Image (cartoon, rainbow, N blue to C red; front, side):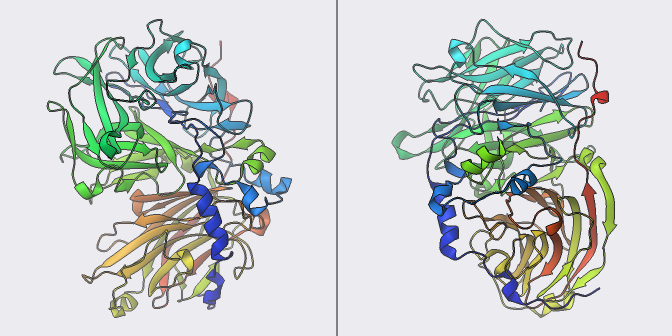
Length: 621
């Protein structure tokens, strides 16, 4: 099937550049606020399964709504959102509480546990945030439980922040979290244990009378010491070890740093001499994570270690691959140009404060992250809730490249699929779009693989080396071999209507090879001016013979995109005013000037909402 040609003016910017500049400038306006990592627990007999599981890990405190989690609408007058628009924004198969604010799982006796920062009093972070708690047996359907912890002791009066859970050899659970004192404000590490270890739902926790068990070391500021990882066991001296991130601002270095501490009883800790890793200019490392990766179950390749940190300065989650020398207490990156904070990210869009845990049942590592809002605080107050969790994702080493991770939705999400439509084989001429005939377009799981016409690619000899997702004009910037991909949440009038583009841009490099970028273009996602709209993404490895493959999860106001099996991912929050309900469509598009493209594989699955089924749970008694 071929579509009629569509004029390039369809991709003209919806708003004048100045309007978008205002929104982007607002993103850089510095307010001070808290955020948090996830807390996840996984059942495992011997090693630490749970890592920092959710939510509030804090860096600084101040005005909620400032910074990247919200754009001040007053500069643009405030969009007159209708109830219909606001109700549409709530996700159907991503976890979020019924109301108010959340920011941030664990596997124990058959249940995944997600603890998250929760504010019952409003839609933004505030003092005295509490730990919400939900459980699931499939990482998709979540059941709410009573609040897990409150800031009710002197050592955590100003916040029960991010934490992690470790499963000891005898099956005992230890929850390690950051507490914040009030006067003076300082962060320290505290522990709690299940009040009833036989309760698989872990509904009650008891804080240890020895708290706090670990204070910030000499040379580290009191509010720069948070978010301990789960512990791993070191056989060399029979101790449990944890990693904590911080920063070093001495002599203007502003370096991100990480320390290892060891303990035998989780009550007395000793710092392992030296610094595990340091990267100049990256600032505070919070919500840090550290784990080994080897590839597939049968892989005999060298074991590598991932170090991940949420960068407090810019609110992105970076990771790097390297080698860990436990005896020397050092971690060294495989590639210094891809070191922590300057190279690879878990997600190039709106995702922060993530954590991972090992699932011993399915022998996989799973990560989740916090996805905040990018609309105005006024809109969040009107709808009565803010933020949600990303889809749980597996994390594995890419054995084909060994230079990056593969981050991919957990297989359990596929149980929500229904009404699958196979549209494979559509060919799209240069400068064309093709409307996909679907029953509904609000909740979708789209699998697509594209291949550019080989003769057209071979005919392109001129190098095109300047393309960048964030600064090259998005889907409107036409090149010989791109952009091409999908338009979701697209209004009927593509010439001036709302649309969110997920696309590849292929270009000829100076050495004659091909360079591929994968991007989400939010710039035309909404007519509202008090919404942050960006183009996000990165270059992605494409090996010889591989088609350009993407998977896009569309769930109302969240769009999560995965390229090349998860080598690059991008999450967008979008707030259309017109392209909602039956008024929205999905299109294939090819805005390249010099090549046709074929969607070799295109399957669109409608997605059911993740309604919790009480019959799946054990009795509460």
